[in-house]
Amino acid sequence: MEIPAGKIVMFVGPSGCGKTTTLKMINRLIEPSEGRIVVDGDDVTDMNSDTLRRGIGYVIQAGGLFPHMTVATNIGIVPKMLGWDKARIAARVDELLELVSLDPALYRDRYPKELSGGQQQRVGVARALAADPPILLMDEPFGAVDPITRLRLQDELINIQEELQKTIVCVTHDFDEAVKLGDWIAIFNEGAQLEQYDTPERILGDPANEFVENFIGSGAGLKQLTLTRVADVGLRAAVVGNPGERAADVLARVVEAGHGHAVIIDERRRPLQRLSRRELGRLQVISDIPDPKLPVVGIRATLNDALDTMLVSSAGAALVTGRRDMFKGVVDVQTVMDAITRSQAAAGLDSDQAPVGLNTGLFQAQASAAGSDPSEIEGSGDGAGAVQ
Image (spheres, rainbow, N blue to C red):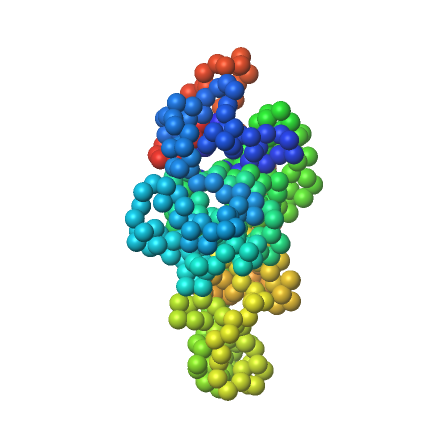
């Protein structure tokens, strides 16, 4: 198989099928017993293992941070090994903390035990990106956090990928997560048998065999909805206010616009609060205290994620953020339901078309003798970070 440069490839399958083993062979944490693993045309077994690993980011469950080191020291450990000077490392640490939506002034000098599980995972991602490696390996990175934090971390990874375009290989047991994050999904069976390697759309629309069909489950039609992003539906504009403003002035704008709420944003346009007309009427001045239960989803979140956020928060709408958590607009239940209806109608129209799901170009499998050379793969994945 070939993992194309700049894409996210998800490994899924039952426990013990070889997902993590395959992942660890890429950076030789497990040595391959036969066959070849090629990164950018170079066989990894011919490379110095330490040099190889310093050029590949690695994220494990719960972050894997060194407990006796500060956040800044954890992130800067690989750049320090590479001989970067202190000023360059410090600037890189602050840049990466901003990238994973952690305020450097608040978090750089903290220790892992002072962070939540989600914050530790964000620092783990930042550490993996510290030396700007073209390849990022992730072994069930979000499996140890609660569902709400998991959704936000998934959105964060999508935003980071849009900005950095890394080659990411990720192991997960969660097929819904694979559909949400993956450009390509590799479904493994027992004995590391690769059953299907394809796009999420093709796997859901045309499973390669009975094993894949059973692995996906009976809710395949519903999982199609995870392919629709918040960015694909129309967002509603919102009346915005800022901390320090008179609440009466913000309320006047809300009434004039015919809206029921105002969104309070900080100087970097990050949402802090969502205040109703009644709440605004009780205040004198808008505070800068963020609401920890604010219903927020990323612009690349799925419609399922948006609905989950609304249901958990008991709100009829969710605030949508883009890169660096900047406020983009509002998505409400009706907008999501309309999009679902359109998606279902489109699926019905497409049902009689020629079947899709054939692996063309990026994946070729052949029943070959052990130790034979891999088949030539054409038409895909040129560029830094491609893995075969």
